[in-house]
Image 1 (cartoon, each protein chain N blue to C red):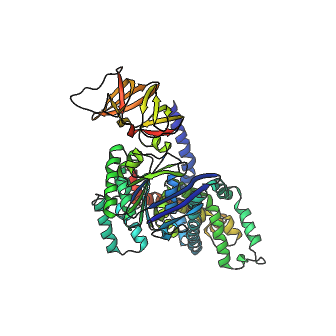
Image 2 (cartoon, each protein chain N blue to C red; image 1 turned 60 degrees about the horizontal axis):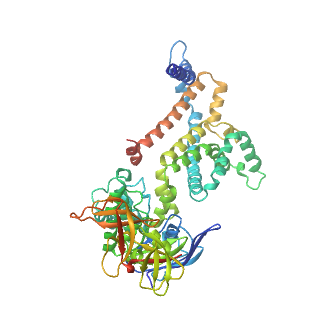
Image 3 (tube, rainbow over the protein chains, first blue to last red; image 1 turned 30 degrees about the horizontal axis):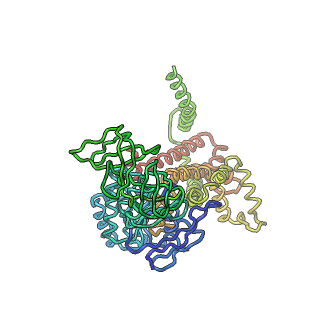
Length: 349
Length: 261
């Protein structure tokens, strides 16, 4: 049985069904990200786990115990909020000690734990400061320490990096993951930033319209999306409409050029989906499919060169690594774009 | 030109507020013929009835403040947290004491809680004190509620509550250790305004026949010349001391003091 078991969770606000039927089993020590667009229900799921929302239906079990009816302060779940939510009248040390004090820990225990937590987040000397005297990144680290201090069974992170600037966001997400691994705490991380979700999670759950479209390892989500929504939402995707010539043999036509996919496809019209890094300039050897097209624009991004091109009336994006001996192609060049048929995602319609 | 009018407006304001006060102070010092003295103040402060009524009103004010805090802070907090749609209704209710005269309220009390009613509060001194305290709390409600509500507006009540709940805190801990300290300056503003209202209140205390400071001031004013002026100056001083204490409390709060820099 999973350590944290969410079974058929549903939540409605009046007539609006925000979470329709959400089930997920999370193993102890796993880091799960709930990823999805605004309004997909990810935060509502998190809030139901925390106890701030009561599910309209469904069950939440932690370590085999049904906690669905328990109040938030009875669940022993740590939570970090987007807006930090540090208590402004308390110092950093008092904030971190708050949960321990509520639990009745004695002074010596509290002081030891606070020191340990402040060391863990890399702010051992800031215990005496007030929240407003800290930067956003420091405040969020204190919020993390505060959530972890009472040794919760589950850690919930509600878009904790959204309010921070890009550089701090990357360093803090790595620190969160490091701390999570060190402590082995079961964690749910809510984000709408796919890079964040893919980079630090054991598994990603992509949500849309109140349901989980797909749950899997980041590699699987990115490379083998189960639905059209997941394919389009996670990463950049080039969509090329194709006419099916032979469904059983997997032969299709794209912009007038034949492509052999080498596997059965649905009959009629399909859409071929390709990641930018799966498309190459020029031929790439035996078995590769190739489409004629024209380079429209070239963006030199340092290690990567992003090329905008046209295949028929469709615009595509492709990424190639920068090679110092090979200058980037010029816009207006007519060329062939090749790809491995195995890298193609075939979407119906 | 605009600048000139600003100075004129300021001067008119200063004259309007300061002149009567200066006149009162000056008059209160003229009890001794031909020279200024503090005789009127000595007489007032030495009057046992002054001490009794003032002590009574101070105690009533403190009890009213305590009751007001217990009533208003959880109510304003709960309305902000759980019933935001009801805020306009609650605000309207808290404003009612401004449009319903104290005399109407106190007659209502006397009618409802007289000795032949189910709850004969006016039948005993303590019961009447309790009734008077409720009356004072009603009169101070618009100021106390607004002060606390403004204080609550400055903090993210919902998120702080959820953060505290996730750390295991119950309602009492949340209110006592997080919400109240964060709106303490606002609560103190409301408290000192309540204090000022209670110290000077006449109608309720007089009609409920309690030995409060307001009726004493009226009595003195009806029978003496210089002492009422001295008493008015003392009452002003008390009010100003309350205002000063609000400022002091704001400055003494460490987390707000540093924020203001």
